[in-house]
Image 1 (spheres, each protein chain N blue to C red):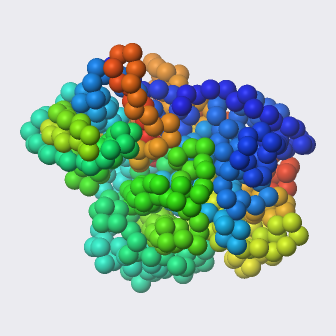
Image 2 (cartoon, chains in turn brown, orange):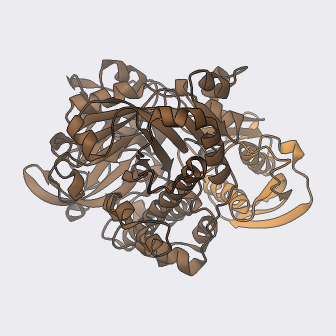
Image 3 (cartoon, chains in turn blue, cyan):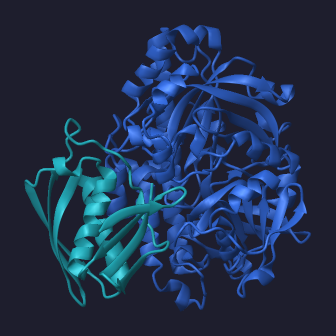
Length: 487
Length: 136
């Protein structure tokens, strides 16, 4: 498959939403809906992402529509930025491709009582210290080692397990989506190969688009919500983006192998093999769900241990315990996951499997799954942008429940392929360009930094603007990066 | 002939070879070259034997590349030269390389997985063509 322009139908519904009618392809069970403005939709049409939105509409049991957020880009099978909810009572399926290889890839935001003027003189040593302490890049192992028995406990219980080892606090758990633990995890469904890949990788960042950033709050848009999150202008924060490392990748890979021939067995016709799926209520579906939940819990442990190492780096540079620096977790959100949630569909309340592939849960004020401290303002939605411009924190709004199964975007979304980004960076030193803008960046690989340069991404401000105007989540604060470590 | 091709978030690998054995060997080398930038610095000091069953050629390629990826992920073994024999019911191969050495090997990408998206092994003018997209 090549990077062809999308030539299919796209009907403008309003300034924030476009439709691919289900009449586009025989086999589509629902419409496709893409959230975008006039400018973003032009970039979205440049590759096959809209075609993938249409393909997802083939999945049995899909409800309402095959949805895509404004940061949508071409993935494999599902587009990245895609949302799909299936009802098990209508033969609904679970699809590992709708979660992705990096199960529970996600983001967390940590605040502090440090301000830009406190950190600026020590920024370089701080970034160096983070880069020295936090394992980044290909093949780097962590300092935390877990034997298979302990690994399985982490997969069953999530980061709550790390509290007793002194590597997490109850406050950290309270501020993690699902409290860092999906019920029904079956560590026994996780293969030996996955355990082998995961045993030394918990607490490692990885490579690709994963990062740890020091950021500064440069604008506050909602005072009440920002105050509830402990954020104010010029405050220094840390944002962490990583997932379930090799363990999760292997769980997805094992599931896709197990699903060879399974769609045919259940009479399911698919336009792309990477959409392989099984009915939720089938042995194959249940097996994947148990393993996926275990990998998700492992991912929350990974981000917890990454945060712990960031706190240690700050302690070392600023000579004060992290508790004194008030480095509290604002929130942790998953953006590659499938969850069984209650939503209103056609006026009726139903339990559906919501697949979020590069999309973030954005529950509104009052939702019982939102922690008490955020119940009035809505769930924090953390949106990483790129390493040169901005990242955002939003708060989920009622519109997400009405339109997108409680979901908003997950990032800026790529606009340039990796190969094009490397060509674009020829002869340039991305790290030096960033330093001239006051951003200290450290990476293991020049190519990695070139592929992830700011120009490779859409403008996150445009993406967030669509989500805000569509009523899915409201703007709370914008952060700008000042320190970046990558693989 | 081996090249990478564009995919927005990930990387594509395209290989053309006169026969299936060379196609599979070149594809494996292409995968390692995505992980390590200086493939020529991988010394051939360790040899590993593989046996991968399968009749569908595209799935066989998928499973074969997964074995190479797993050798790196589990044992940090970088494999750089391959002798592959593709049969009707699977393949047998020997691969040579060495364990990862951070001082000599310039690492480039963490390949998360081989994907089925756009996966193909088919006959073409020059012999055989393979395309595979890997998740970065």
